[in-house]
Length: 107
Image (cartoon, rainbow, N blue to C red; front, side, top):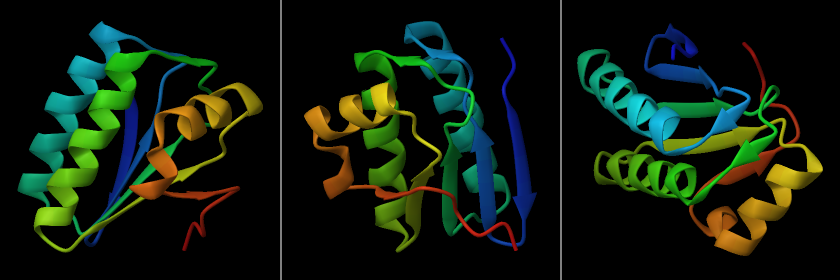
């Protein structure tokens, strides 16, 4: 599985896949950590435009990336959540760790 991402100076935008299950979460975790370290990322954006499902592995991956960014004073944003993913976020308490916006500024 391959997911898409964009990097700009200090910023990484990850376009999450349709389903974030254990396999997808593991690959996203590894790739995101490598990109965060290699590009000295300070601002991480997860774009959920295409995501319809996320299980506990996805929640764990997001919590881990939030902690990783927190260690360096970075920030994490989740954008474009549909109703189902928004409900998962809320039930998991993710809005306490990750800023949720309808659509982030693409500047």
